[in-house]
Length: 184
Image (cartoon, rainbow, N blue to C red; front, top):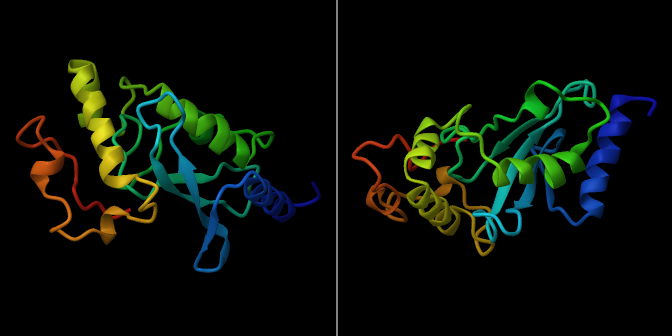
């Protein structure tokens, strides 16, 4: 590749050629949303999330910033911002990786194999370690509430207080720290 911008354009094109829905944000080429489906045979199967991607000007030499826009319950995803704790993106990124790696390998692996010992969402990590069955039920509940294909663009900031009450999403503790209306 002769320039980072050509590489960026080619990586985005590869995503679209693999039938990912890619939507630019504010007509910026460096920032866009990608529709991401939960991996098969995982707690997240059937869920559809919008992932915000920001590519720095020096991409692919510097890693993309990745974040979930609609809510997801996962120890390694911040429950407020949707940012992802993933070593391969945050610390060991290589220009050999591309956006297809992010969406076809890294994010599916994150969802399939959460790491509760290095959490961004300590409540989800605690629940996973203390009561795995309840954690799995709560993950499926979040998928149902926030990540159904029929409503893939529903983000927490777009919901009204009437849509979902605190009682609908929180029964693990009196104050479980999961925000009902997080602003991504």
